[in-house]
Length: 286
Length: 87
Image (cartoon, rainbow over the protein chains, first blue to last red):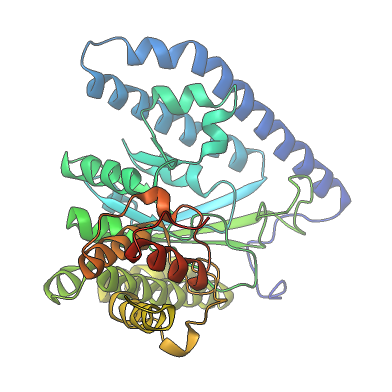
């Protein structure tokens, strides 16, 4: 790859690698213990600290966001990953429908940490997990159990002015494969009549991808670049007058194309170095 | 009474109209989800359209076991014959 051109190269070698395996393990143990302990103590206390259900959920979500930032700080301090974020301030506003590509296990940690309060869709496996079901329950996250009910729940969240985060692929991308976007994100945007706020995530060298064991750390510290883009409007798809089954298909195609283009551009900019400058300039031009 | 061939042709038309699926892709063996990428929300749209076309009430149960285009044709055929759908 571009090992020689990369100026961010941290020390490599066996010792560094063993350190990063240890650091990754330690991070995940902290995550697991934290999730269980907080799920049985602080989260229920925060959630039940008010009789207003939504206010209780908002408190838990803000605390979860803080914990995700602390967890990321832990991983970066240990040298397991490094992370740069462009356009962070664009995620500060509430009521946004955020969609992102999904290369690694910790994308959700990054995004939840970047947003003050956000609803997420959580898969059935987690709701059945005896430890993890409690944090996702107290945080009021949405279950993916039902097809039409899921779209309605997401529409209701956005309609009430809350933010929602979705990975349109539904699962992590396998490295080297093209994006396989499900149509749910487009269905939600069209039903709620809100634009999509796209976030591109790249990780070099790739780590924690689908099917990759956590202890198989890459050759050097994995570097994340996260770029918050300008909103993708959906008015043209709403105004087209076509059946919503077709509008959802066309919006999904446009969204997949947007991510193909912008993730490829972000990768090219990382390969040529100095992403910060170029990404800032790109922010102006979108 | 409609023949299964007529139902098949009509289903091809509906799938093109609703989902822009090329009629050539629609064979009796084609799997609705794996081959034609018809997801759970599409299924709701499809059943609504079939209700309009057949003028019959459709219980989601009657389509629960439908996996392929052929299954769907048989289910619709049973429906218009007013017989319980074959599983």
